[in-house]
Image (cartoon, rainbow, N blue to C red; front, side, top):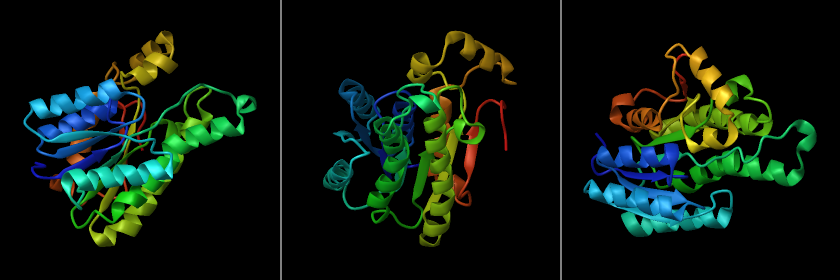
Length: 249
């Protein structure tokens, strides 16, 4: 489905990002696995991709910093040439649950930088390498539409910005043949929720979901692969929910 395509996945060392990188490789893509903290995870992801007979590299870059974004672009071109077919803006994080009165400017910059600034400027950096038939997939969140849980105001707001940016880029880049869509995961069983969501809350949310379970990272990756492929060639500007029916547009 993606044979010979070049894909860049930010935050590709673990959880949803890792599942996406591996899925794209299974479909035939060569993959740039971006990471910041999880070097071992990135190397494991690359090793898994190579075991599938595909090419991959790991690139350390803080995608909230302009110089690192430029370096990520440079390393991608060095490894795979001057063309990128698939960009997945997956890097993001909650970091801490904080109420309004617990915010400070540094925390604001951290959350907005990793979740929204990275999406904007990684897209800007790679857009010139993309052409007709290329696909950009942004990772938003169910929190973008419902405000998120307690203490996740900035995270939810940053993801809301990602959703709006997705719609705007679909209009701007569509005439060039570049499609831009976002995925809005609900409760997906990852380290994100291991770290930031209490077990009793996860159990309650899963029980409230029509499918009566959490989602899996591989299920998100399957949707990314579809949006990256020509099979979704007329899907553009959408924020697609993947939450088992807990909430829908």
